[in-house]
Length: 83
Image (cartoon, rainbow, N blue to C red):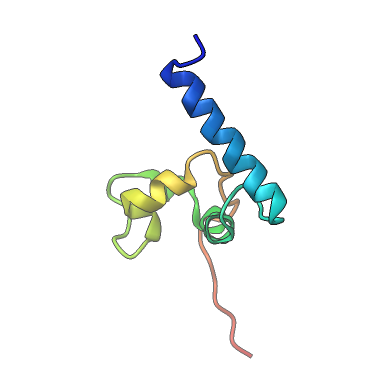
């Protein structure tokens, strides 16, 4: 029981958690946090469709994985106002 693979995985996670806490680091990368904030603003029902715009970052599989579970934006069309 003590030498099972699952125990080693759990021990590794404990070491990682303590290392983050020791150095005052958040458990999730700040890059990922900022990317998710930006992607949640772009995450619309239209971006989930296969025929979505190729310039939409959410058309890339890597960004789709990051956007999983994020709330969807309330806007469907965006407008740029210049003054």
